[in-house]
Length: 354
Picture 1 (cartoon, rainbow, N blue to C red):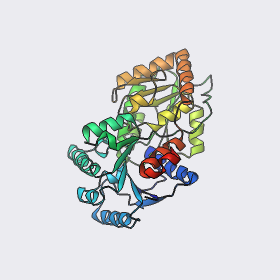
Picture 2 (picture 1 turned 90 degrees about the horizontal axis):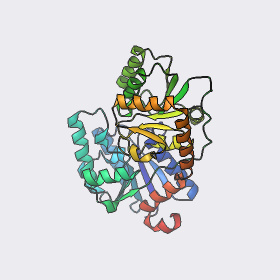
Picture 3 (picture 1 turned 45 degrees about the horizontal axis):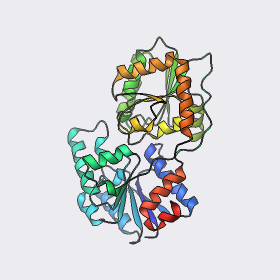
Picture 4 (picture 1 turned 120 degrees about the vertical axis):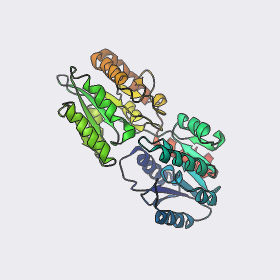
C-alpha cells in the first residue's frame, strides 16, 4: 500500500469539527511527505441517491488497488452492505460519531442507519475514532472488535491565553458549533433565561443554515425570552474572527446532547478557559474534571445551576482557568494525530511516522 485515498462526502470547507479534522489530516500529511489525496464524494450522504451511490462506487473503484481507502464515516456508515462487502479489507473507516445517533432523526431512520453502519463496519480493515468513549461504544453497540479500533484524538494548535471581556462589562460566554439539534442550544437558552438577574452575554459561533427549522425555533425562543440583546447568533466565521471570540471569552459553554469527542472543548482548554459542558457522549472525558463543571445532557436546570455557580464565583472561574491553561500543555498536536492515522492506513510507515 503506497498512498492514502481519503474519501470525504460534501464540502470539505464547511465549518464543522468533522471536516476540520479531515482538512488537518490532509494538510499534515502533505507536510510530512505522505502521499495522500482528497477523493471528493457527493454531498447527499448519509442519505445518498442511487445516482450518487453509483458515482461513489465509480470514484472509489477508480483508485489504485494498492492504495488504502480511508473513508469518512459520514459516507462509509451509509454504504449499503453490498458495497461495503465489495471493498472488504481495503477500507479504513473514520468514525467521528455513529450516524444513527444524530439528534432529531425519526426512530425508524435512526434504526436503519445503525443497522447499516453496523453491517458496513464488519468489512472495514480498521476503524479510526477520536476518543476512547467512541471506541467503547463501537465495540459494545456496533460489534467492532477492539483490536480493529484505533483512537486518534484530534490535535490542538498552540494558542495565546484568553484575556476575557472588559472588567466593567457583562461576563462573556461563548459556545461554538453549528446550530443543529444535537448541539442543544435550546437547552442553553432555557437555562440562561432563568439567569436574567446575572450580568452575562452569550455569543454562539456556528453555521446557521444546516438545520433551518432548528435555527428558526432557536431565534424564536431567544425572542420570546427577551434575550435578543444578550445572545448573539454570530453564524459561521473565519479563523481570525473565531480566535478573537475565544480571546474575549470569560466562560466557555458546550450544551451538546452528544459528541464523539468535542473538539471545541480542547480548543477552549488551549486558551485557558473555564468550561461548563454536558456529559453527552465523549464530552465527559474530553474536558478534565478540574476545568469543567459537567451536567447531564438536556437538563436545563442543571445547566443553569452550573452556569450560576461560575458566574457568581470569580475565584472559582480563575482556578478552573488556571487548570485549563496547565492542561493545555498536555494536549496532542495535529502532527501526532496525523501520524497515528497514517500508521493505521499505511502500516509499513508505522516506524517512520510513529
